[in-house]
Image (cartoon, rainbow, N blue to C red; front, side, top):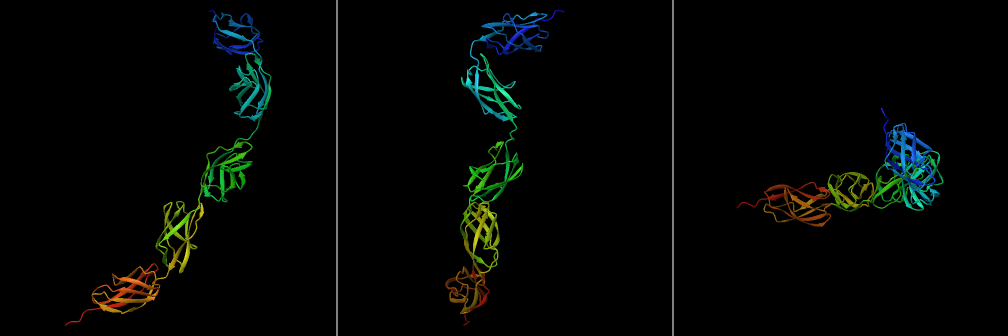
Length: 425
């Protein structure tokens, strides 16, 4: 059975310098057993059959456009596939910046020289890589992975340039910060946080936004503790810098303003506590503690501007109420602890069932009176002083009733007031 005649379908590159020496990939079919590759009438002295569909051949010297053919025992290819010899200068390299990079590659390298506009290939050693022709004097290329020191060359229609060295170095992998704990704190800074990630060993800087940490300690390749610098309210990126570079942004820390209190309602209450006090202000949403003096209080966050707190018990007198969040502790607002009022006398202590008569109540702690009752009936009253009230007895059935006074400090023990029926006629 006769051997198949080879076919040639494509060349890469399809042009090169007249001096030859360009490595060309010849694509087609039936290449197994090829005995010759010709560029025009001149045989390539060096070629290699890679597969039945691919031959690598080194061009001989030549001029103009010539037909490329492949010969094997079955015959010679007849397709009109042309290779063009180009007259032009050989590219020249004068610098490679940077001249080193990691073994993993990926570094963008700027090549400077002359005759670079027609570049067809950039190689780091024997490895071709992606590149962009910026101008006739500049190319940017991405360093492929490699080791040691290799020669960087540029090939164009006029030939291949001189080589300049590029060194692959064992640069550490860049750091990665995955978490900051706690993730928030006061704008005044000074608190300590823990940074977790990888490749943190050898850290030379820790930053919160644009501000350097007050100090930091590398605990391990996966953990750093840092003292937070002052900042402004809001989010900032936390980054770590090592010899391998700076970690990418995206791990954030939140600066929180110090809470502020503007009022407490009511502003007083009984010494036994237990009453609800509404606190108003700003920055209250993240409240972690409420104190009345030194005593902690139970509380409920209603909004960023309002809390409901249960007053704890205390001795009589005024205390400062404060609120604490991760942003710090607020200013204080006054709260007054009051003892329950005391009644010592009623003058008179009896009156008609129809009421309407004035009764003078004497005792102590009466200045903040909010209610006076005769039995279950409320009475109109006037505060004369902390020791005296004037009340109008309400109507009621004949007989004795307890009279009490209520203030924010509580309700007094009762004194007896007697309603007397009208005489029978």
